[in-house]
Image (tube, rainbow, N blue to C red; front, side, top):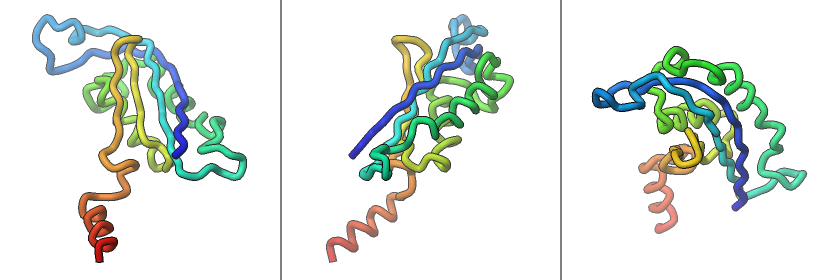
Length: 138
């Protein structure tokens, strides 16, 4: 199995809803975010790569156009926690990049959230896995 990752950065502000009164993250504040996408494949393409890194520029273009130097509460329709951002970015790009297995969002050097779907790219459900197991047992 081959795994690659690529990092993208952006700066943005946000404030988190639903926190106790006085919680610092309930105030408007900002981060210099780092987004790490991970792609995985059992096979390499004809050039010996999982994916050519240059083919991932679409992710950076989207981040720059829609998230960089924005107030995330104004451009997203969910509470912009690192966890929610990781899932949002995964969901946004997993159909374009079928090898995508995880997205990590770092707010700083000590805080990060990583989203990985339960079954790889989410193409298999509990039922389909059970069916495959049953097929192999008969």
